[in-house]
Image 1 (cartoon, one colour):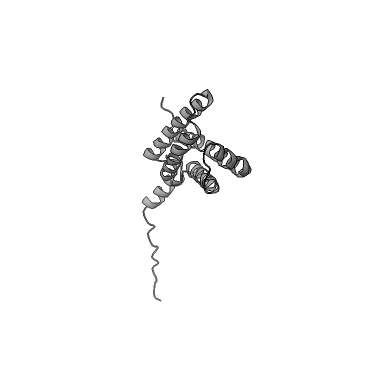
Image 2 (cartoon, helix red, strand yellow):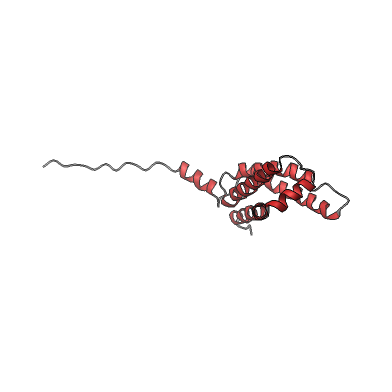
Length: 148
């Protein structure tokens, strides 16, 4: 028996998005701690700009995945964001925890590439907008006027 893949794709998008949404919200909740951590990892210039950029990408990209709106673009945005984030924060391989984070990020990047390639699925705003655009235009109602 083949499962209904519409729901599996929706759950996959939600699971991908949760990590980024929680990370973005955590950054908003602790701006000083986040920027101090960024500085400690070698990001000593434009920390404020990178901080705001990370929040915008993580919150915007996660909402894109959650809603399935412009999901391919959101997935690409998050994928590209993860490349420098992974290389800056998770390449101290002598620390087993950092190796796990590095591999986790690679796996998440794979999921993002899947969304970028195949889209958000049937249960998404993207699919709803496509259905609306493909629907035939309503026929005008013509009333017949009878002269008396």
